[in-house]
Image (cartoon, rainbow, N blue to C red; front, side, top):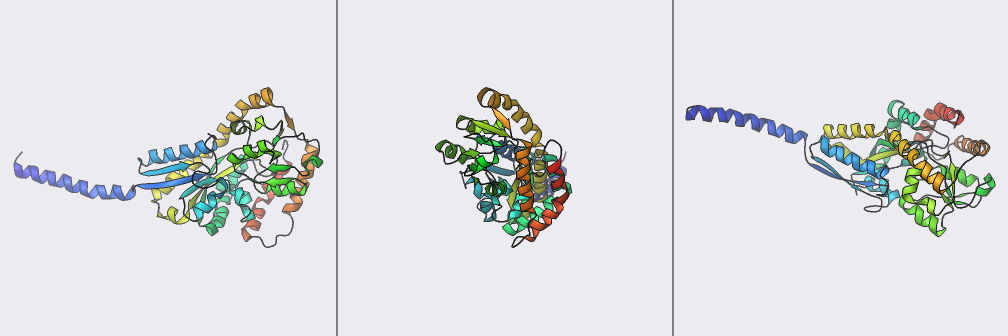
Length: 346
């Protein structure tokens, strides 16, 4: 090949490469985020799900989008994840929205409502019933956007240092319980306390707590509750499911390329099938935790009935000085909530 023809051909190839490279660089910029989770590292279900998410994001984006995951307490306390995302301390957080129901009662509907939806119903409401839009309308007030993540499925009723024989035994009982359900227990005389997962065992061991609830046999064993509490009850009427959310700082979300936004949405929707894995793990550990170490007891339907009546009366009281969204979500959940409350086996 003559020298002039070679230079001409090489020049065409170089020009094509120069045109293609900027387009790739623009669509796949290097982005590094931090994710603060509400969970301790020992929980390979909840915290492990965050790590899995970060790995998948890196793989899909050819390592251009890196997310570093931090456990509760490493950057911010477990119950302050929303605040950290809102003020931009971190770009992203993984948490349960009902931890923040004190900021707005509507947050309760993002995780679990007593005698409320199960995991399949929650998934249907969020994805196809307008739930995601309503929750993001609320989160916009906190400079965030939310994406539903994994779900624990139905939960156990928790660990108690003393036997519960009647509703009267709840009077004065100091119990760790998440979200709005503590309000209902307080009506029955209990003293609800909201603590992050990693803070529960020390409080239970010292006697600061008389009882606690978390998730189920697998996760509860990881946190060691069986070592200091003798009685294990089921079911957990306050959480027919436990929906987690990924919170993202709204300005940071808007800065992301559409392809990165799509990757986040796609992976978290895949994680939404989490209850299958969680149910398998919980069932596998149930015999060990319950059979070999502690006896579990079912709370009678009669006791549930009194709690349900109190819960329903509270929810149907006139709404005063509450967000408009709370009422909108309540109207949206009216029919499925009643169905879930009276469904056989619940």
